[in-house]
Amino acid sequence: MSSWWKTNSLQMYEERTARVQEVMVKLREEGEFIALKGWRDEMYEVFHQRSSPPVFRMERTATALLGVKQYGVHVNGYVEHPQKGPLMWIGRRAKNKSTYPGKLDQVTAGGFTAGLTAQEVLVKECAEEANIPQDIALTAQPAGAISYFYEDERGLFPEIQFVFDLKLPLDFQPVNTDGEVSEFYLWDMDKVKEQIAQPDFKPNCAMVVLDFLIRHGHIHPDQEPRYLQFLENLHKTLF
Image 1 (spheres, rainbow, N blue to C red):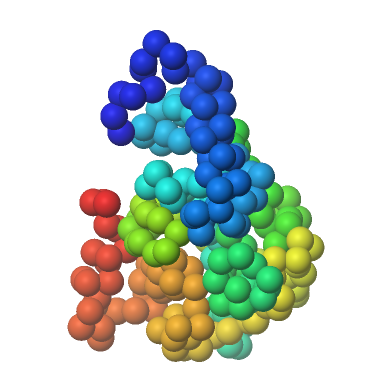
Image 2: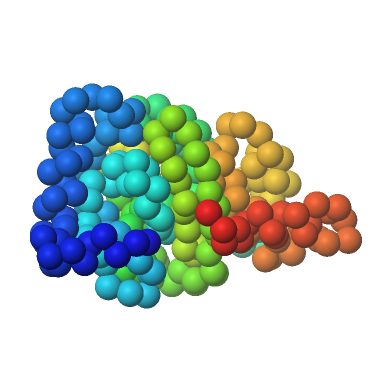
């Protein structure tokens, strides 16, 4: 990221935030950019590096116009069935979602909201999307991250998703509370492997599930000729 924000007129975090917001609101009013038609009134923090203080914050849907690296939290919700073995909860996105409506997804996932930590995002999304109580959500285990880049009609998307594995009680039934998930499925790993290769799955969510399957030994290097290719593509670092 360049040092444009160090100019005399934009030395402070709030000043930079205000100026960027002013520009994006104007662009939204002009209606020329598809990305801004999904305006969420949700502020997103922009970092030089995730470990450094934020440079400014901006409307989340506008980040694609600047190619801002986005971060999110994805949760693999699974159960250990005594007869059927490991099963995974999969959600289907509501048909009125602005992005990837009706596609298959994690049991819960969401982008970072300004000011929240990864664990706070996890607890928030677990409650909103699947009605997972906080005491259960906090047992989720961090399992690394995946990274990738894509471009579409909205703009540029360099993204990193923090991944968590959450073992849910056998009798737990996720229930959506924010209207963003239409239904949930509990599938065995063979069904999950079959579905992530289909266009019905949201692409980055399929990557998170693929990462889970590799880490838990459901995809074996001696049985999958594209094993190393999968690993490389889950951890792209050049955008």
